Image (cartoon, helix red, strand yellow):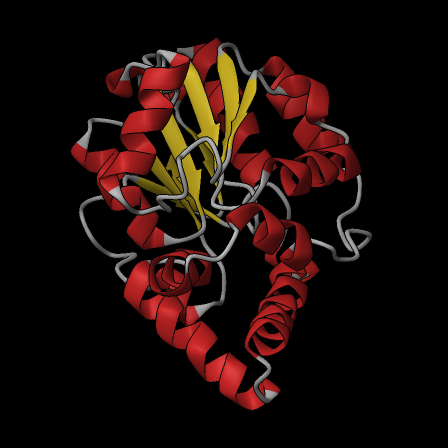
Length: 237
C-alpha cells in the first residue's frame, strides 16, 4: 500500500482494506455511541426478569444475573441452561426499553452507503432490538442482514458457534471480512478465523479487557470517521 493510501482518524492510520468485501458490525455501543447507554436499561430489565421469574429480591436477582453472565457469556444462556427458561420471552422482556437516546446518524449512513460490499449486523441481542436501533440511526436500508442471538441458536459471542453459524448462513469468507466490536474479547474468534478486526474503544474497563492483544488489528473511537478514512484510502490507493 502506498503512503498516500493512508488516512488518519483518532491518531491511527486507517488502511484501505481492499480485500474486505463483507463489513460486519456489532450493534450495541458499536453502531451507536456508548454514551447512549441502552444496555443500562437492558441490565435493569434483566434483573427485573429474574426477580419476577423466581420471586426473589431484586438484589439477589442481580447477583444471579452477574454470576450467570460471567459463567455462560450471557445471563440468558445461564438461565436457559440452569432453569430452561423461554429465551424468546426473556428477550422480549429485557429489550422493552426506551430507544430514544439513539439519534439519527447521517454521517454513518453516508459512510455505509459509500462503502462497497455487503454489510451485516452481528449481535448477541434480538432481531427486534436491532431493527429498532437501526431505525433510530437511519441506516436500516444499508444492511444486507442481521445475525442475532436467535439465528446463533442462543450460543452467544464469543462462542465459536456464533461465528461459524454466521459465516455459513451468509456465505462470508473470513479472509474477506472485517468485524467491528466494542468488546475486545469478541474479536479473538474473528481473528482466529482470518477476519480483519476493528475495536471500537469505550471507557468501559470490562469491554476493553484484552484490547492490547494481537487479535485487535485496528482501533477507533469514531466509527463513521474511521470508515470515511478507509473509503478515502481506497480512492487514493
